[in-house]
Length: 322
Image 1 (spheres, rainbow, N blue to C red):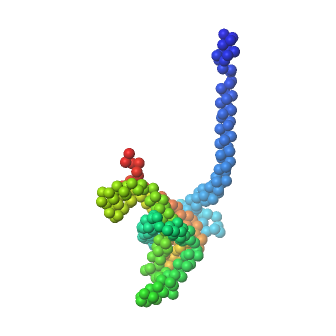
Image 2 (image 1 turned 60 degrees about the horizontal axis):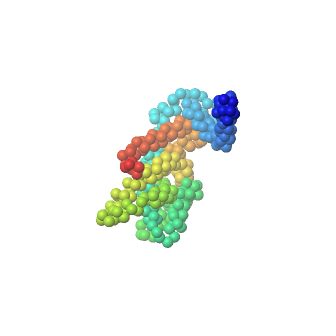
Image 3 (image 1 turned 30 degrees about the vertical axis):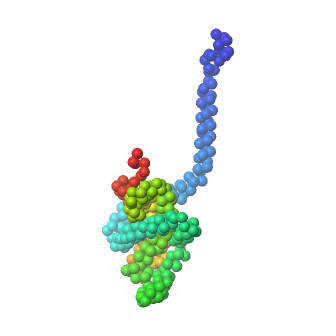
């Protein structure tokens, strides 16, 4: 019996597992604290610059606040006023929806077309890709918006090019209510670089064996594009659609610069975000502007959720066939 115990065959020492468990728990606690310590700068930034302002704007949306006096609670008055007594609010919604519906599909089509052209083994293709990506880096800048206003002005490059072709146009494209919005659509389409790069990555993931098998079966280029490329690229198309739709709803700088901050002519470029800015920082109606901001958040969430619901009918994932 004593020999067995001396060889370790008896009961383990009392308190041994407890001390080991406590030691392991303290190690895990220290590791967790180290992880939270590294996350602290991000957590502070999130609370101070994101969560805090969001909570403050939600509170202000139910108040009458003009920066100069303390907020005065008004209940749902700001939300009711948006839909009942503000005609420019409806105009801003119409302009924004028109912009999103037209510019996003055109931008994605243009980006996909260029991605297909650049997905080839041609000399200097990497240089072309870099050049075509540049508009995405510059498109939302103030300098490009100013340049765009000049290009589509009465004496701009567009009218000069049309005059060279024998078409005399004397109007300003950004100064006409009929064409001002479409100049901003053209600017958004011009920033095709980011979705183009994503499309290129998606095209590179399609196995070439599918195209080879289709070619053997006699399928032409258009049939291979419609039966292979598009179905296998639908997840990438869906991803780009979500990103570009959200970005289009939040567009501000082009409309502000091109219209001089007025949303003109005749409110034809009065984007929702531009009107929000006017109410909050020009009219000092911050309570109303906060309500508009929350309505925009809800609208983007609903549109995004609708896109996810509809995606089950047209987005194909390769693992679904298993």
